[in-house]
Amino acid sequence: MSAAIVIPEFITVTLGFAVFLMGARLNARVEVLRRFNIPEPVTGGLLAALVVLAVYLFSGRAVEFEMASRDFFLVLFFAGIGLNARLSDLIAGGKPLAILLVLTLMTIVAQNIIGAAGAVLFGYPAQAGVLFGSASLIGGHGTAIAWAPDVAEATGLSGATELGVAVATLGLVLAALVGGPVARILITRNNLAPARPDEGSTIGLPDADVAPAAQIDHLSLMRVMLFLNFAIILGYIGSQLIEAAGLKLPLFVPCLIAGILIANLRAWLRPNAPAVSRTPALALVSEFSLGAFLAMSLMALQLWTIAELGLAIAVIMTAQTAFAVAFVLYVLFPLLGSGYRGAVLAAGFGGFALGATPTAIANMTAVTKRYGPSPIAFVVLPLVSAFFVDIANAIVIQMIVNF
Image (cartoon, rainbow, N blue to C red):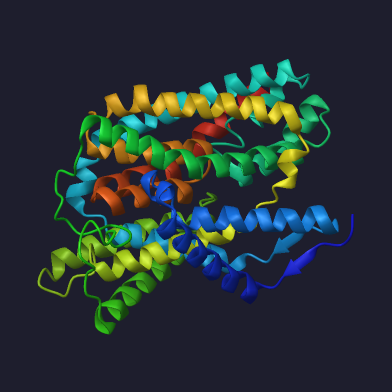
């Protein structure tokens, strides 16, 4: 194959903005995309990924994007999630958090059972099922790449890394597409509405047909950016201390925690200070950050890696998607009380189980922009995905690979 076409960092970010705006325009014009709550960066990102695929098919050259700046948007986004978290929400979120922890573990086990069965059906070693299962899906690209060498060593499977990346890529696409429709089914079928509809948006401003656009001035925006930077600085210090203690967590996790601490200490020490949490300015910055991150992530997908695996990946991923949808409809939603928050978390969990946390948050954002806020959902799901999943997933994968 010819040398890859490498897109420099600054152009990657610029294209990410353009892709997001393209998705917003398409969503505005295509009613079915809005009806099923497909996030704007997903629409634009997948269309851009198809263009990249066409370049590869016609030229034989892969398109690779320099992506370091993308991760800054992710950190900025999670710092914003932390600033929006109120202590009362954290207390109220205790029960749904515990339920989600248990359901996440059940999902990890089920995904690997489906993956192992599919692997054996198509002539792969049973241990390779983790690459058709939780290593690539609920774990994502990073976990798939990390565990692929262990699978290859245990089974002699060649191309384990490529397999894991392909499954994770398709999972990300499916995750971005299933969450919104699932929430729409639950909300319309059960006639659901937010318990506190007048509460400020966590991420993104409401759609124009739901509520009038909020006023944002330069002072509110600058105040939000100042406190986001405070959270990121404190989170970076915390990340260094965690690493020095011999632990490893993504940078966005301590930034999320730092945001929670700053927001609640500020509310306690200076209750009459100008608001930052739940403000339109913070909601706008959060949506911008998430949209830029997701648009860049999706436009950089190498879709040809999926096609190369053919029938096996198609059948197994169909089964994984069917399980995820059935699980959130008939297990997760009832256990979370069959209310509006449960529907929003169903959209997020569908995206999280098949893809990644940012995709899950994008799904929930699209839902809440249309139907109304659900602040606790935006605190609970990142806590599950940030703290619990990697540990539980590693234990289950290790047991299967070494079986």
